[in-house]
Image (tube, rainbow, N blue to C red; front, side):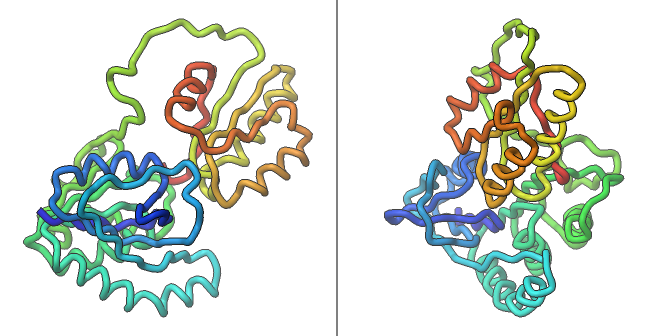
Amino acid sequence: MRLAVFTHVIHKKYRDKYYAYSPYVREINLWIKNAEEVQVFAPLVEDVPDRNLNYIHQNLIFRRIPALDLLSLGSTLRAGLMFPIIFLKVLSGMHRTDHIHIRCPGNIGLIACIAQMFFPQKKKSVKYAGNWDPDSDQPWSYNLQKWILNNKFLSRNMNVLVYGNWRSGSNNIQPFYTASFSEKKKTEFKKDFSRPYNFIFAGNLVKGKGVFKSIDLIENIRKLGYPCTLNIYGDGKLHEQLKNYIIQKNLTDSVFMMGRTDLMELEKAYRKAHFVILLSKSE
């Protein structure tokens, strides 16, 4: 079977191997292990892969497509100019594959959602790694992706994996949960909730993940007289801004940037933490 993956996740190439955000790659490696050929359509940058994971497959072909965003007038105009090129490349990739796998929400995911309509007979799967709640306030592009994926006429032969079980979904929609740890990792132990309280944030340091609000939360809790700390695990374009924000708030003794770490260290951090902060806008 030939499998094609379409994603907005930024990739890095090092010594003929392709690296990307570790939780994403860890999951994709499970998807692709039984495929004879894998094509990945995604943005690529020239950079050191840091602690990211690489794909594990003997016959993986990477197809570079530009990263897109609609955050400013300039980037929106650029996206409009690049759309026909990317769309034709996505169409070509879908034509040559047996199974189409799309990662949503994202701008590349939106293009792939539109392109897959031209291949009603092909098997398709989508991982929607965002908030599927129909009543939530979402960007228009996210709502458009959800509408296309939920429509059985526009999206045929498709299984869409979403977080939660929602009443308004069509037969395309399948409840699904991605576990960071295996069942074997489950243990029961009693936590000591004595002060100081330890909070943890883990994720990409990008807009919409609620990292600044997490820092504000710790500041307000401390103002109420409760000693607490926050360990921030992850990396991203907001790293330097967050460091300066912590200094500005005089929280260098209670909010710590831990960077990107491996799964074993993160597991220890979760065990130690009293509370996990989850303030993502789209998840």
